[in-house]
Image (tube, rainbow, N blue to C red):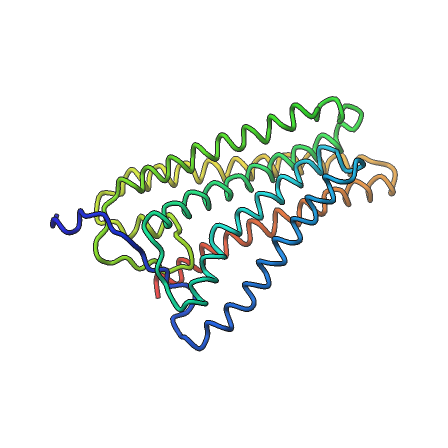
Length: 268
């Protein structure tokens, strides 16, 4: 391998959605609006939960944590993309790219775990309503959130350390609007077998475990709802799960869209 390929790079280029200058304002406006709506909406929800004693329940505790994580998740990539569009620049420093990748992985993982924990919360509330307040004790809720943070911090740190060991050539263009770990690994000119092995193993374990937990919880919930004799009870049970199901669908559809757009952009 040539010596210059082993030198540490100082910056990457984020190609974004389009390289046409006249399309940049059309991209800037919608993304700025969506970002502001996301941040303000989640902040209002956190303030509402914290200020209303009637909302100090396990479900809203998890929901407020999810709102905080969503704010952080969107803030890892969107602000930098908006600045680059405004400044007509595509540059992100090596350190900035690693930091962005770390926090993006961290908060994406937290989203996955919190959605799974919320599915368990709904399972206990509907299938075991008489034991709900005993089972979902505040210390257990706090422990579930704490364990989620510890696991995701460890996974993100592991990913980042593995990427730091990689060497990059002069081709430093990332065909996306943020430093996505899979694309960074593809740019490396050194061996990436360990990175790919760890990334795919952990990702499959994380996503499949989360989906399995959510599907199991809702299979039990559906069985309990079908066994209810009261139409009002069925409606109440379905209404308590509808918002969570919507959030789960939006999250996984968004993640899928991001990775599909990454694959299409890279192939083109």
